[in-house]
Length: 313
Length: 228
Image (cartoon, rainbow over all chains, first blue to last red; front, side, top):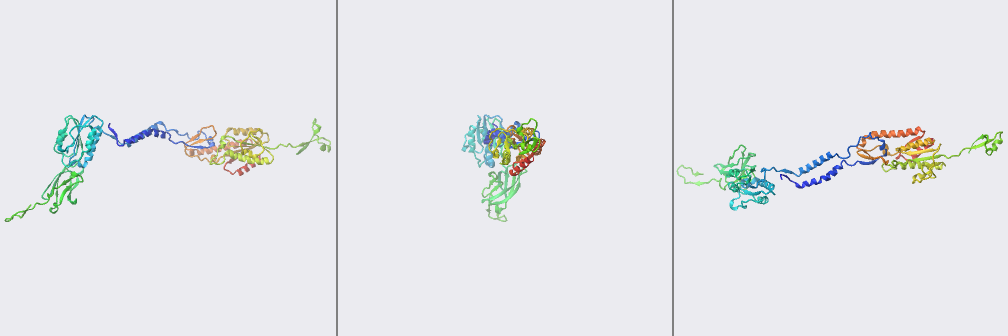
């Protein structure tokens, strides 16, 4: 059942077609009835012959077809093209729910849910594998369930604040299973393993973040060096340094469009101690929390002897 | 009334001799009197269903024609003449025209009578009535009664026109205003044809609209009767 409708109730309008048929059949409206005895004086050939009183059937058919098409169009048909043409016997749906997936996690869940809805009513068994759910607090036993149950399980999955473990997910996929990997598009250890997991048809749905994603950041002598994941869209952005009350202390424009992944930002020493966060966007993956005190200069007082410098950082 | 004295013809009855006149001469004379035939007015109001048409709630053509004829009949009866209605015979009261018709003994028209044919002349038998009466030596007036809507063609748009004659199907016109010229030509030709037919047999021709003041119309009709 690949053709689905966004507003299926509008299809009830199709039931109105017979009514429309009657209405259209009556068009054009009945002429006004008047009385004029002397009309007999007007010869039959002097007045143009009246047009066809009834709508020709082919015009009627075209109008009804047009209306039917309109109703079908308004009902919002969605042609769900099956990536996995044949409905598989078993499918493992792997969904990245680590910190990098947070900005678009709702879309990722929707994508997985759409597949589950397609499979609903078939005999397919589904294994749902969130990659960031660690083994010790895994809410789901790694077993195959029917699509409706998997859909309910999917609703309970949230993005986590920690990293994904794709290798563990890959290990849980049986050899005869098809795989749908709803990915956050961020490379990690085990990604290649997961991409080759399973024995059936494999499919990857990628949801790369629209904002730069911090991979790491470290203090330097003059500020911070940040490393971001390669961006697919956009590029010009700014790295903002924020104090603990949310004030932007400094904003450094950066251009990440040419594949640059590392950016250095310099912050004066006086302000460096105030910085608690670095941010390049609104999402959690675009925010890097600086370890408190990272930016503060460690001061060591050393006993001075001779001409040695009194202070050392 | 006295008409003339004429000599007694051979073989004529002696009882007819007017002795007073004959005494004044040698010949025998017969006194002749004027034949006292009362003038007869025949009123023929068309009974075709098309006469029952009135636009804008006015008088129908039949009502208007009956009204004119009734007014005329009242004055004619007052003058001591006879009024004959078709299929009702001689009437004593001109207002009978305004009442439901009572069948009576038909009085055929004869030479010298005067007739009024009040009609819209849309039915074929009206002209044949005119011919029949004129063949009998009757003279009179061909009165055309017309509704304003028939004179001023005002149809527009898509209409289904009922001729009200009880026989033809309603006529469908898609753009009624587009044939107004053709209608007026046909309408004028119709009036001309009636006029030709009337004048051809020496009758008068009168055209009256039902929205004209009845008094004026009666005057016109009476004047035209007087000329016949």
